[in-house]
Image 1 (cartoon, helix red, strand yellow):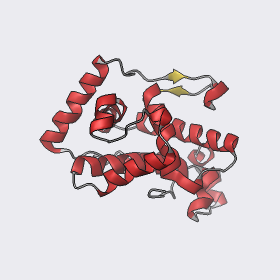
Image 2: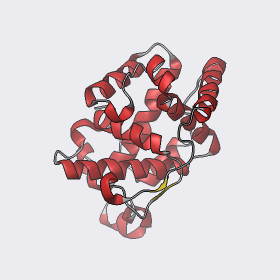
Image 3: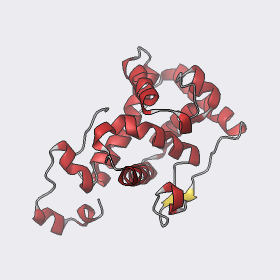
Length: 212
C-alpha cells in the first residue's frame, strides 16, 4: 500500500493538490513526455475523455461523464489502485470493484478541476504509461495494463518510488497523491485513516461534505 493520506473533503484536497506542480521534470523530462504524448496520439492510443460508460461490466456510475480520463487511463488505474490502496479495498469482489470504479470517477472529477498546467503534466504522464513502447522500456511493465497483476503493479510503483531519476519519483508521487485523495477522501473510507469525519455541525453547514 502506498501513502494513505486523507482527512479533508475530496474537493478541498484536490484544490490543494492543484497548487503544486506534480512533475518537475526539467528540460529533458519535458521533452521526453512531450514526445511520448505526440507519439502516443499518432499510434492510436485513446486521447479523448471517455464520457459515459455503461454500469454493466464496468461498475461505473452510468450517469457519470468522464471529462479527463481516457479509456486507457481508466484501465491504468484499475491495474494500479489495488497496489496503491492495498488492504483498504473491500475483500468482497463486487464491493471491491465498485470501490475501484468510484475512486476512478473521483480521480477524474478531481483532475478536471485542476488548472491547465497540472492537467497537461498528468496527460503526458498517463500517455507515457499507456503507450506500449514506453510502458515497456521506461516503466518496465511488460504486460498490457489489463493483464498486470497486483504484484507487478506494486513492483513498478516501488521502482519509481526509489528511483534516482526525478521524473520517475515525481510520477510516483502524482499517481499516489491523486489516488489516495480520491479513495481516502471519500466518507466511506475515512475510518481507514483513523479520521472520524467532520463534526455534525460542519456537515450541516458545509454542503460539500454531503457530496464527498
